[in-house]
Image (tube, rainbow, N blue to C red; front, side, top):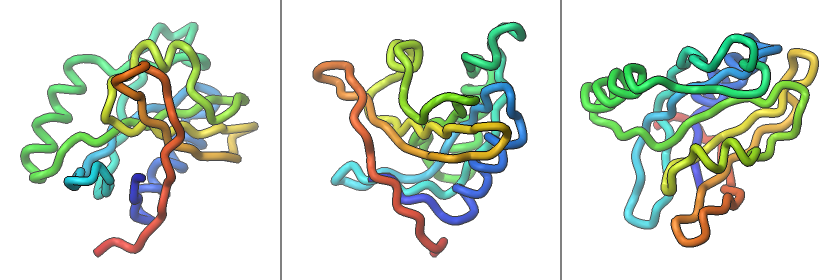
Length: 144
């Protein structure tokens, strides 16, 4: 399960709608407890570095962006707990490209953005055993 504050989910949804018709992407910071539940405290947009011609169907976060994200996490005393991206005019379900580029443990929030409006948001976690995604429950909560 991943807990998202209203501020975090609003940021993610706004990024998805705002970058339509291209895929948006970003990094989610927070904490993971001993049971594996994640609490997101902050989300940051990332530049989609994928080839310009394919940004409608793909996203890429560069190593430089990840290095800066690791620094941000340390400064805020948080962890990178996941990533988000949009699927313009497609379902909120991981593609094979998403699966191949994912790592276990992280949450992968995917938004279906149709004609500039987010219509569905889901989260997924990649299993280390079979390298397949399973849906993860999203809970919206008030920031403590």
